[in-house]
Image 1 (cartoon, helix red, strand yellow):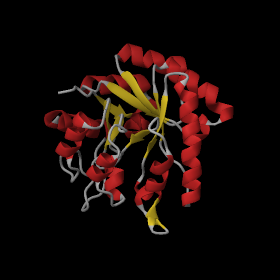
Image 2 (cartoon, helix red, strand yellow; image 1 turned 30 degrees about the horizontal axis):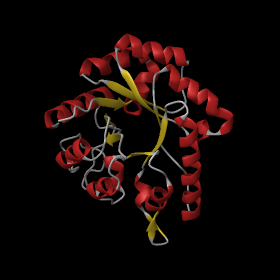
Image 3 (cartoon, one colour; image 1 turned 45 degrees about the vertical axis):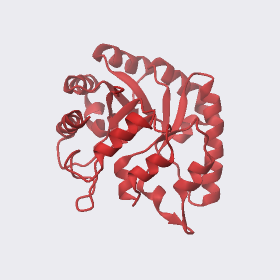
Image 4 (cartoon, helix red, strand yellow; image 1 turned 90 degrees about the vertical axis):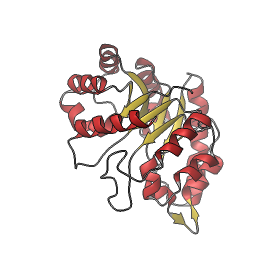
Length: 247
């Protein structure tokens, strides 16, 4: 069985990281996480992020990067930032398309970005939200987007967001084998939304892990938990323990 390491989406502990980046990264490492995915525009210098990774022994397995940061004016700076932290997955967490034509255009633009990043040994990708699965004129914009983006684009399926949007997680994964290089493990249930911890929710975890092992070509599991029911560091620690018990 292929070993797939587990990382934390740092958006889960964004307040703690902003207040004390070193202590937060140290705590994440001590929980047993092997990597982190940063989120948003950088708050600190590239060298500072690189030193945090080196000192804690964590790997940067992705960066949720605003779409604007991949446009021509900011592209070079974005590449340099990701080179500094050793990251090859530059994932777009949000695209604001409304119509199918807009999503087709965004997909073609993402293909162009994928070509540019490939020169640096990097890949782009898209992280879904619940609204991507809401039908527009009888068809989901998710399907429109996925119909045009090439296999160079990572499909970073967010399990909780997909379920919240009414999607069948396993159907979506099986439709695109080999595309889920990184996957967001986010809990969700019909009764309580994003509140439950991993293992207390309704995501089909065993099937998800089996897919990632056999068909996903998955390199990283990335845990994301956003509900304020629990203190953030406590929540992501509990989620990691639950994942470790299942994989």
